[in-house]
Length: 500
Image 1 (cartoon, rainbow, N blue to C red):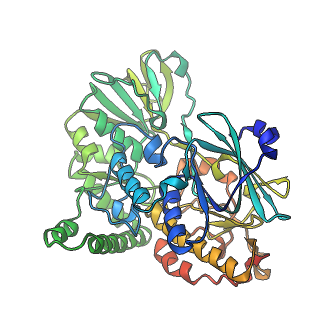
Image 2: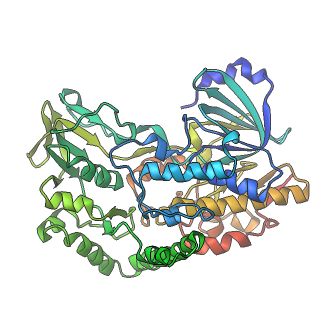
Image 3: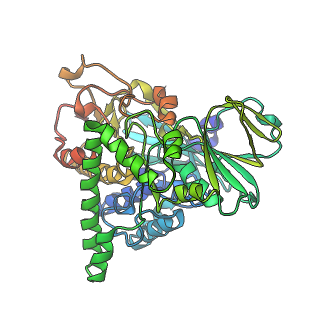
């Protein structure tokens, strides 16, 4: 949370460094934003403030066994930087790729590590953002001003994951760890491990621990959909044999994947039962039908929650080999030696891993103010999920749930650069979005339709997020296949854009 002591520190009177654009975060979105800014607005000065001690965001802070992407890198990677490895990549491989982008484009000198932003204050009198941050390795408070704020900090709190509080946890004699803060000294060799959760993290941790642990049990309240297949793309391998240029391969494979994803997503809504049976069939190729029925058959329609890809079926192979198992039940209480379930079954454990999600992070846990008044972010209305009513000179990258995050980061990058050029052309120092006359009576709804997508982290924090309207321009549609054509056609002279 913001350090309120900074609000009254001497830094408030210190001379500030000024930049045209201040980018928050050196993760996949922030590095991509910096690239687009350099390419499309080469005259703009910019700085990237990053709270951690290196770039990478998720791929730097998460260190649990086997951490990997659950999106393919042909679409999770940048459109401008060909991906040449396996489609599902490890954190180390993703950071290597990002490091190459930073080095090849001279971005490193623009990054300030250990800079945790505490406050961001907009002044309409000056048409400036004033930002205060604490430098982690020295404790020094530093101040910046910026014409434009580009929020690329992601959407969850890196410092701590979400762990529910169950009865008896203090009695447990083993270790309880969350994947987001994985201890370097955790030795699970020969240990009995219970992993609570059934999302992408659990599906990664379980197969990567079960070869070393005595046994790993995945404990879930309800089943989750998974997709599985080879961690390879045949057409990419064939094109490489033909020595086709990697940039061509990247674009061809990227288009192929996006087309297939579009078809699959559409089918998930139009013929959900058929898609469900196809997904269950993939799982059933590796484990007995009764296990699929008991533990891998969700009650909800495909894509109401994110569908994780299990490369080379490693999770299911671990179960088939008897190294891992799945239990579907609710927790009654912890005790000294493990977990007692509602059914009365007891799971013996030396280590419990709570792969139970994360805390939604709203604008980086920064204390925002507009003209001296605290910003109530949840009272604003989103413009296409990237700008917000009554917040001048700011854009936020919030990616897709049903497609790769970076696809939207690239689209937002193009939009922000076009908006900055439009401001220059108009001689404007300020831009914000407002509801048009025809929009004032439209219903205001939660950030996203709960019937369409409802993961736990979003439902726990949706009250913190802006409202959406019932018109397409006032929504985060989650529809890459439409937005890729719509965003370049946004009329920056439209009534919803107010310049000053």
